[in-house]
Structure formats: structure tokens, C-alpha cells
Image 1 (spheres, rainbow, N blue to C red):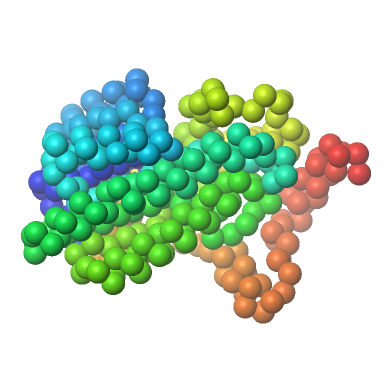
Image 2: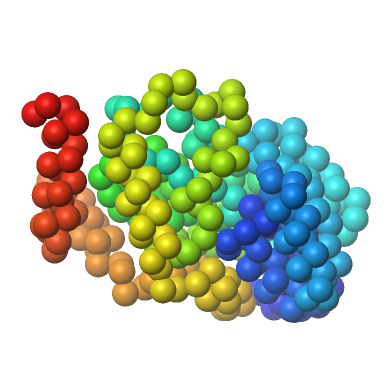
Length: 304
């Protein structure tokens, strides 16, 4: 896809992390930018930064888990700029712990944002993008869904997050195939970042009150939170680096986008496990001391 001034980009989760960097990349290319986030004050601050980069900006406070709010985001976009050229279904939340310890509220929150939020974006924004393509032979569009390396491997103690991100990968692969059936003007990509310093490890700050668990966090959930914070904060690849790579991938038509291509060996191992019908390989095979510490902590919790 050829990226150029005057096009419009819609970004969810735009107040921080990847979303803010996507917005800045679009602004530097002279695009109109629609910035959506659930956190109003942070969104206002981020939008000012993007305006200073030269973009015309529309902001819309949106809980992407709510279909009606994503519909409102679409309506505001169409009224202001028409059908967008780029849609970044980017907003996401993180939650870990042993998979049977996730509460119903945990499942509703994580799947609501990470999966249904992406599904709402695809379901609502794709039809007007297709209409724009039919009406204008020069129109080009691209939909970018943010998944994770957790959508390609199944790390332990990250159950609900893994499930949500695997679903986003499947959704996006299907979206790409379906788009290829009906148009040559719109394509899709899936972004699978590894550990990058963003605000996702603190996403509980925006968890709706009605979806907060009443029980205290379990030991496995506390361990998962601590490991996530350490891994994310120590990442050497920046959100800006990932945004630049993502825009380059859009221009080249690349479907799978990675922040850490050198970290794909666990994906290859998992695929070989599947193809050879062998049991899942120990994820701590290369770092047994990490696995031993985790097992010791979790078995102490359960009294085993």
C-alpha cells in the first residue's frame, strides 16, 4: 500500500505505547489521525502531541469492548474524514496466572478488550472501507491488528492472555484471506510484538469496576504480574521502533510483523511439536533455572 498525505488512520489504544507511536508515524506522513482510548485525560495529552507533529486529529473516548462505542467511533470518523485508509485495532490488556484460577470477570475483561474489541473494529469498519474501494479505484486500505508473540506460542501462567492473542492471530489470518476473495485494494497485517516497554503491564488501571474480581489475586497471578512488569520494562526495542517497522510492513504488504524476529525459535518449536504430534516442548528447556523457580513458587502455593 502506498502511504501518503491526506489519508486517514484510526488507532485504538492511542494514548500510549504502540498506539501513540502509530499516531505520530501517521502524523509525520501528513495523515489525518483518529485517536481512540478508554482513558480520557491521557488521550487529550497524547492528541496534543500528535497535533504538534502536524496532524489534524479527532479524538474519541472509546471502550472497544462495547460494540455501541466502536460504532460511535466509526460514525465520528465517517462524519469527519470519510472511510479511513488505515485501521489499527491496537488496544489491549494483560492478565496472567494459572488458567483455572481466572475468574469469570477475568475472562470477560481480557476477551472483551483483546478479542471482541478487535472483532468489533473489523466488523464495523471493513464494510465502509470496502464501499470506498468500490467507489474509488485509487482507494487503498489496510487493517492492522495487534496480537502478540503470545498469539504464536503458549507460555505457561499466561492463560487468558494467550487465548485472546491466539484468537486475534486466527481472526487476522482469516480476515486477510477473506479480503483477498473480494478486493485487491484492502489488505491486513497482524503485529506480534515480544517484550517492548509500553503501559500494557499496568492495564489493570483501566479495568471496569464491574469486571474486577472480588477475590484477592492468587500467588500465580502475582507472580505473572511481576514477571510481566520486569520483562516489559527491560525491553530494548522501543514502541517507536515497532511503529516504524509496522508502517514499513504496510508499505511492503507484509502480513506477519515482529518486533523481535530473532525470537521466533519457540514458534518453530511449537509448529514442529504440532507437525510431529509430540507433546509440547518444555518452554524452559533453554533456561531450566527459570522454570524451576516458577515451579517451586507455584507448588509451594498449592502445598504440593
